[in-house]
Length: 449
Ligand code: SF4
Ligand code: SF4
Image (cartoon, rainbow, N blue to C red; front, side, top):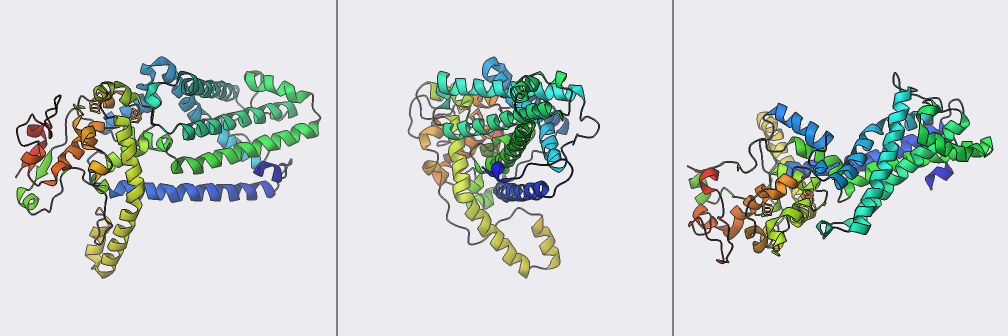
């Protein structure tokens, strides 16, 4: 809608376009930054977790799991669908730079690589691949309708696919009209799809094509900034969160739990909280996990508990925890910031400095809802056999078992580790239902002092 209100860019320099661009960028950038700040504060709310070791391994995971799409490509159809969209997203970042530059001057080209035939060719190829990927996604979701999507936010995913499609269609329209006007950046012979579409515009008067070019340009730019502002507010913020989440994956063997160094004296006095009883007991990585879920249901598909009709779905577990982070997290963060500010104002300069670098915690925090049973029911927790199939399958390296073990540890509300371990027998689970798992790897996990 906005695009029709904007005068078309003219040859030479006009201030109208840049001013309008600045207004859109400020609005979208403001919304993005405001949300990004909250997301960061919510992550900071979490308990500590050391995920900064073994840097080479982390870089390798980023290269294989994120850039190489290794886990997704284990299943060729859905894997290629996602890879086309993801790789296209990366390659077509160059077209965003070009579109913004063209608002300043119609003859804009990226320094060094702009106007090269190869750049035009790969942009054209990836535009086609993204469109193919979107169509495959629509086919999988609307025609195949796999069971793994049960419980996912499908309407929102549809809307995002529609936005991606809009971005690509306006990009191709922009390229085609520019070819028709003779102001194309890359040689037309190297952009076959855009050249093919340009034939539809060749029959139109020059002025009409020029108007179309402006409409495509502004629609493209508005969609891109709209996408930037919308995604962090949606349930699909994995588009931005999954890359860091993969980077911060545990580098140790998947089944190995973090050791808990427990001071028994403090534990008996109630100064130590074990496991995840409330949302702010999750570690920062666990909170990042919840942002990163794509709701693809691959974990649910392979979960032996879900497959045998039990209520545990690792996907729904992560989604429910994410909802809880957003429901209660902002109030906790706000209360902590107020508490920290008050204490900072009363603190000495040395104390002040040390508090700035410490994880925030505050007095007078709001009441929190117990995660169990309000967010995750007992059955869901105890049905997990900690096999790790969900983690093996998850394309964004979410660590479900860590969540479930932390939830398990908080069960019972007793300060006694033995009681938390199901009566200390090492084998039974509360309720004594058949099919019980051995609750935790107690000997590996607990270090009691
Ligand atoms: S670890 Fe638990 S949640 Fe994950 S697949 Fe195995 S049983 Fe399901
Ligand atoms: S946890 Fe991982 S595998 Fe499961 S739905 Fe989310 S992204 Fe997909």
